[in-house]
Length: 236
Image (cartoon, rainbow, N blue to C red):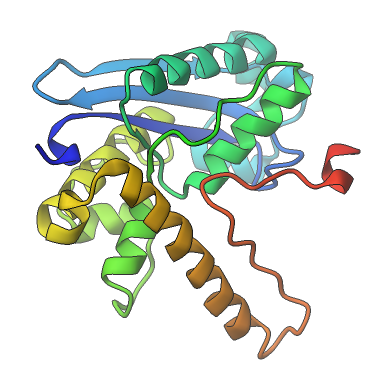
């Protein structure tokens, strides 16, 4: 049976910003779906450890600093809960579906380290709809946000930029991608994971070369699905 017909676990984070090293998890969701079983969703709202949520971020996901502090669980508890939920998924051999995986998985990794928690183990299977779409339909024009991919693959999207809606939508896009592309659905998960590592590295190298035509200092990191922490970043 193709992997896309089995159980999938969508993972999504809405954050206080786009810097995985310094910004914080605001909301998160792990949703298990498919495989002929009921959908099971776990969601969290963090108090962000007392940090401020910039208006630019709250305008997108609609969680203000006041709401996070009033209704959110302690940040360390939220991170521990997310790690536990994903740990169960990994143990069960269910692939983690994450749109633009290096963002969500790296932010979770840094939050775990920030709170003295053990990060997720390495090597578990990850499916990244953004990376798959960018590879199988490389020359398609237009943006590739989750909203755009949902429109292209005719996938329903609930309230965009909420972790719950985005997590389930990522699974649906991954399913649709695999359903359309024989090579994606028939590749064993472990092999597909390794292919995505190579695809991301190739994309990053090409994109960096393009950016350096106008900005010689441009850097595009190509690690996937997690950005390793550098010594300077660890010292922050």
